[in-house]
Length: 398
Image (cartoon, rainbow, N blue to C red):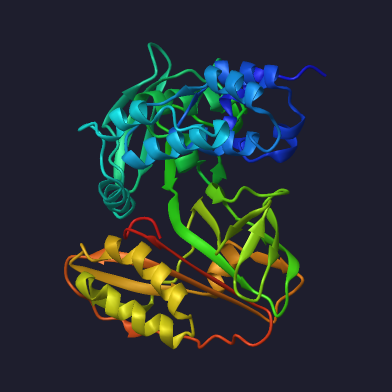
């Protein structure tokens, strides 16, 4: 059966961490894929970091020369791409070129980007009032987070759902992986005729916004050095970023040490990183309301109470608190059983303890009353796994 390289290029994000595809596909065919797609700087970095495990410098140069990269938006993106070039070829010859981009006034700092991302995740996305897919056809009403958008030009006979998603993204900039679309109680899937969903003039379509689960990281503390498999499954969501790349499916295969050091494909690291876009099922009935400026003291106290160690607490606070201190007030609700249901984790050999800390933060303009939440104190005897992460939500997406 002939491979559809164009289809692969259109879904390149699905293949960036697919070791089977990357190891078995010839450089010539990788070039075909790269000719027909544009990579974000992060996609470029991850793809060629993974390809370097299977190809030499000559083939890497050929493939890199075929890649199209979207415009840089942050200095971090420039640095990621620069690092890949230097690591693959072993020479910093492009430093002056990349310094031009890094010093460009049009680039945001990483902090500005993170702040904007957190702001966008804590407020509903604004839709245009009207979108046209072309002449003819009929209109439907799109509802999302309290906004309504009239879409005209729906051609039920000649348009399938994939074309609908593409037209919608072209008009609004909102990609299909950011939302779940429903007609009535039926979720609209790609590659189906629109007629499958009984869409008629005046039909109401509903969009549910995906949340971003921010930097869940996993620490492993076995009693002795051992090989460990760690699997993460996302129910009703997708991975937006992982590091290092998975070894098989959504499973890491690593060597873990009692010190917490993790070895993966010859590289040493302190934790495994993953991030997801998901449709949340959050419990916000019990928790804590704090001033944003109190977030450091709050998390120092609560995480210590839950028995995280100093290094884990430091990693957590330096990632999350810069995002939270800018808010006037924040409602903090820790998620336990429901997070396990949304994103179950399996570790082999089975640890004595899997301790997962995931919180949801809801920015507030004024404080509100909430019943305090009882927090567990985690056990750390025997083989122990520690994980922390979180998400910033709005009142309209939980």
